[in-house]
Image (tube, rainbow, N blue to C red; front, side, top):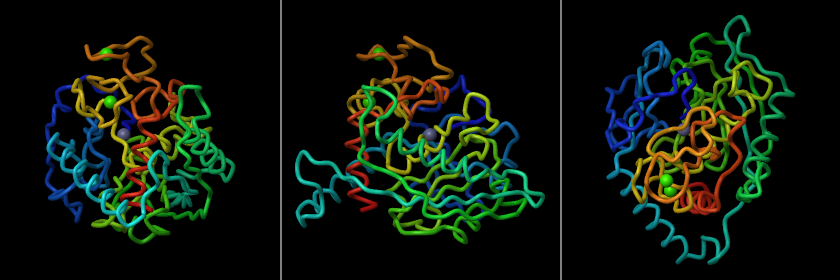
Length: 313
Ligand SMILES: [Ca+2]
Ligand SMILES: [Ca+2]
Ligand SMILES: [Zn+2]
C-alpha cells in the first residue's frame, strides 16, 4: 500500500510488529492472513472510514510472527514444487508475461476516467520498472506485462472504493497469473493483495490504484505511474523495504538495507538504521516520490520468482 495524503511521522512505532486489527466489516475478514496489503503505517485515511466506502480500515500490519509463518509456508510449497519438477532449476528464475486487466471505476458523472493513452503508458511503465530500465543497479525481473482488457464502469460507490469486495468479485478477470488493476478515487495511492492470499480469496486478488497516479495524472509527485509498480510489487509478494524496521531480516530480502520507517520525498543519504547500507530510498517498495524510484534489487527479483512459483505459476 502506498499512502496518498499522508507521509507518516509515526511509522516506526507501528512497524514494530504491531497488528492493527480493525474489526472487519462487510466480509473484509482479517481473521487469518490480511486480505489487503499490510505493513503500511499510513493507514489512517485523512477522511476516516469513509475513504474505504464505509468499510473502515480492513488492513493491519503484518507481525513478525505472521511474516515468519508466510516465509516458512512458502519455503515448504517451493520445496514440494521443486520435488515435482515445477520450480525453475537452480540458478534460474521464473519469468512470465502477465496479462493486465484495467478496470476504470468512474463516478456516475464520469469522474475518475483515464485515457487509453494513459493506460498504455501505465503498462509501459510496469514493463520498464520490472525490466530494470531505470538504473544500472536495478534487476531485470524477467516479468513483462500486456494489456489484456479494459472496462469502464459508472458507479459512485465503486468509484470511491466502496463495496470493494463486491466490485472486485464482480469485475475481476483472468486466473491467478492475471494482474487486475482497479482505478478508483480514495485516500490511498494504492492497496494490493498478496499472492499467498490468492487461494483463500481469489475473487478480490489484484491491486487498487488511485486513478490520478497514472502517467499524466494529477497526483503531484505521484503521477509517473510508479504506484502501480509498487502495488504490483506487493502483488508479487514483496514487502515494503521498511517492513520489520531495523532488523536483520526486515523485508525478507537480503540486498535491501534495513530501514526504520518509510522515506518521504527523496532523502538522499538517509541512513535510518545502524545496520549496513544507506536506506533504499530509490527502491520501488519504499514510499519515495515517483521521481525518486528507480529499482527493484536482484534479491527482490529472486523473491518475486519464488512467490510466482509458489502461488501464481
Ligand atoms: Ca532487507
Ligand atoms: Ca544503515
Ligand atoms: Zn505498499
